[in-house]
Image (cartoon, rainbow, N blue to C red; front, top):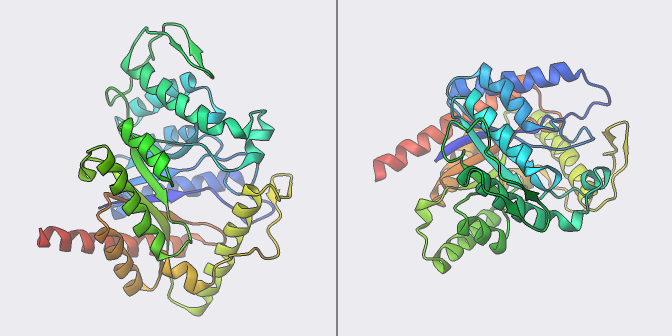
Length: 348
């Protein structure tokens, strides 16, 4: 089971030195490479402190020069908000700069706020994603062949430069339903599903859905990269439990309000006070994730690996989490996954 760090570029502070925030993302990625993570992935979001990376590929271009081994991923590019032809060029360029270490993840998005501010109808996000993926695949596979769809149309062109990985870097899709998994399987895409804070049963249900969709198409599940994403943090004191609750509460409230269009954003800062239905307790966060003491992290790593997934994404440094705790957590999670992988190899 491969291990990946997922970093938002999030802050709870009303003011922040953006240079420091980006340097922290660079330093976190270098540390992830040092301790043995297989990949580092970055989200795309717009116009608020929920996540301050509006173009993940720009960040990956910088990280390509700061790292040597670790895979660099987008999780996800909000493809419905972008011109897929320009995205294809950026993918190829970053893949070259990273010497073929790029992983390209795409999704439809869930925040109408971002779509409204860019003048794009959120109800069209799904169809634009589907057609955008098809156009990207076409561009890399069929040089000088035009494309005409409902949302996008191109004349004959060739993506120049070509990517380092041919015909293109690995494509991933953020999925959470049978329909989206089926879409990915029919196009040969890898799949990542976010378990979030929705309890330990969701991971098993997502894996069961994935296997069912594979059976429908007579696809061997082991031939498809299938990842689950959860949260991770090493907790060694009551104070750190309290930090988890505050940080998780911030994350939950902002996500819910953006999804339901009840947000209040002033000068890029989300109003995150109060309480939202379903806000997890510490026990709730821990049960669904790798948030806990070392023994809990080890048990959860083994549980996720036991589901037969190929990759595990860990959301790190959200809310109030600072560098010392984040680095200790990354080290502990790496050690737990390494132990689990060694036991799996021994058993096989």
